[in-house]
Length: 128
Image (cartoon, rainbow, N blue to C red; front, side):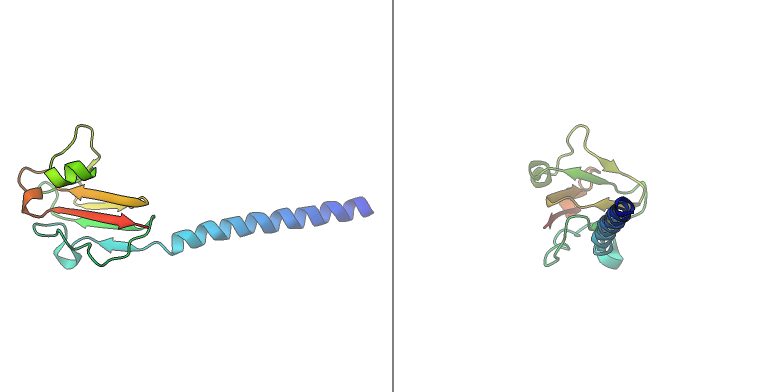
């Protein structure tokens, strides 16, 4: 009888721990925020600076809205961001409704269409 009692208690503890872990994972997702880059103007010229004053967190999503075929979104490093250059094999999004999840630290994005980055189509989002 005592053996069954211990098995029952062990089962309850295991179930409680599993439930707690699942709830913690779900809570983390619940606190992620979605930001539309450029707000109602979308991903367009002179969007640079839109990110200033925002408190991004790792796991937040940036939504890039733009006319597909006219622009794109390229994930770059700081050097490519500063020079408005597209590195070989850079992740490039072209749907016109791109959702990109932020990683912890600096996240750099430019439009890779010739001349667009130079006209302010770039943002640097730092996520805590």
